Image (cartoon, rainbow, N blue to C red; front, side):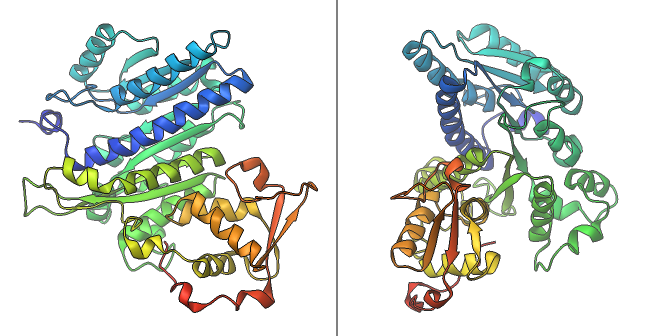
Length: 412
């Protein structure tokens, strides 16, 4: 049995986990963009599946193209029934290199009754996606790319991520984003070896192995690889989230623990916020995942959010975080604080907002409104407000925080 065929017999544990995150995010993504379209008259929204596969598994379980279709169909139908004079249309573009898989996608497309536009493209992802990027119709439309390369680093490159996010002559204010399945386990295994190293370095946007490992002081090669990649993306002005996931195949108790990262990048603060909340929501449902995974040994996401000690993430820790990155006594734009915490602290944005509000009421921090508005709750999930507020961590108040709030955690 070939690896390709074996993959489609039934979902592996790590595929189930990827798809859970995709479901959570697409629910938020499709609903929020639909709501936004009401105000900006944006009629077309695109989801592009870079390695779409065959659409469904041999046991009938849904693949990523059908998961996306399910979420978008519901939102589109509801929106168009509620606002018949403001048409909204989701578009799904599936790219698949394997011809048998492509034929299965076409079979499903012809069989499914849906008002969502579906187009299947047969060919290499690097080639076909470049053609998609050049389409005039997509240039000024929101686009979400799901990139889950079957053969890993050979199928993708760092420069290509940038191409997907920065359309030629496109409007930078239009939301573009990419969610990548980053097979860290394989990269750690093969980055030092000649045959695979060139592909991995191209994937990372690195000139040499030395450049990756010397980019910071990390105790593990895995940490160095992820940190290097995120830094490269952020150097391009992107917001980047990563989440580590690991699980073991229950059918092979002697197999290694497989780990990978889901990496999300965009130049939209709203996308950053929604992906963080999707990661948190997925972690909160860890117990239901464990039942579905049929005995798989699971340590989901390394988020610790479901563990009671991490639920006690403290105000002292948040103050330490702000001090480390922005210092004491200086005016710091709230936008900078929120963007940093969303990318690096593995808790809900609501938790951070509540903590900042408490610190404000306790006179640990000072709030300065640039626009003159007297906000009763300055800490919220509205990105445009973040740029109108400065926060100052007051020097003479910081040390009044009790050490009992909790010890400093390793957040990165």
